Image 1 (tube, rainbow, N blue to C red):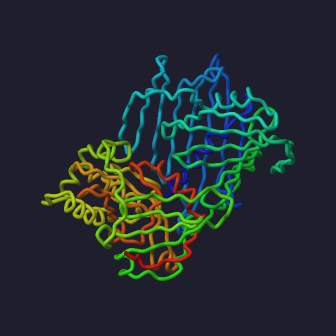
Image 2: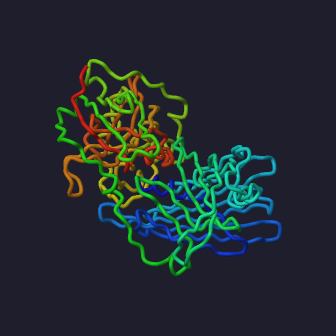
Image 3: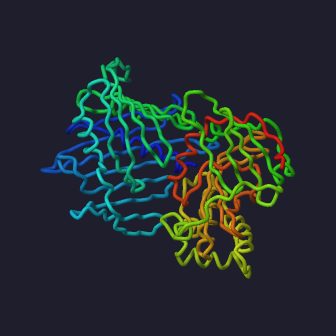
Length: 482
């Protein structure tokens, strides 16, 4: 879950990054009161062009391992805020990904992605009205700071080449305590539509439209950014262990027999004022809401007499190679045929591939942030996400529609805890007319898997799950009745 967490952080902060002209803005980044990193934003005018550079470095822990993550985005725009070009580099645990883009005069975006050591250039439509950093700053300036003002803007996210809507509401002036003293600032509340998961942010800006403080909800925590001196922003970190926070206690022990047959989960949110909890509806998981109570009915296909309603069949995108599932790469194709062996049906091919990936990834390494399938094929190490993306890519290499699921899985003993659900990812394949789950990181799929969202292997589809992780409570678990 590291890269999705970092991606959400980077994309959310991009909508908040407004710098004073010809100045550096340093900010300290805190999570749950612990300093995890810093961010620097600079803006300079070069003739008729404005260049904004945003650099962020953070550090978190996962099961005692410190993980460093960094991103650097350079946006080039006209002095009127028209996008011209951008480059963003992100790195987690030594794995670097790059996105570059040139906005052409014909309204097209020439985008080059470098993921897993493979460069790919595509021509896309530039989203109508989408803005980069300077354009967003000018949009806020044009609407002013009168309390009650509301406006919408479109923020282009260079990290994933998508545009998101930002709904801004201007509040009153408030006296805000910052590390370097008190300031009178204007409150802005924004709803950012990230991957279908609305994220509410609150920021406080000064009269030059420079953000001095920002709050972003994440994993049940409150992420805080505070403008301060460089010495303050770059002070030593105190990284919290995010995995421990996202662990979810189970109300009782779940036997293998329970998990094979199917389970009904009664779940609720630990807070009453947050966004609604979100879960995926799949061929193995039904989501029922009655009187504000959520029930998840989860069962492996064929385990019960009554199966959940069928979900939509695959589309062309479920069989195509993409930046994270490089299913046409020779290395991936070779592994797919080796792993499938002599299997002659999609179902037997996927079972063979599940066993193959489990054995192929020899180094079960929690320090890997989020590697693409090709990176895992070349360097077989990682955690559940690396197992999931490789398995999904191998299935596509054989013409089988696949996708990647993120969620939680029940573990009897993990990191000193017993009977807990931990963040997890696995693959699904469309075989015999249904979407069936395969878990190569563990011993296959069972009813101990709670699906939060489904996607195409890219880290962006995890957004919906990040709104639920850290805020979820399992009230009861009962055997699934017919």
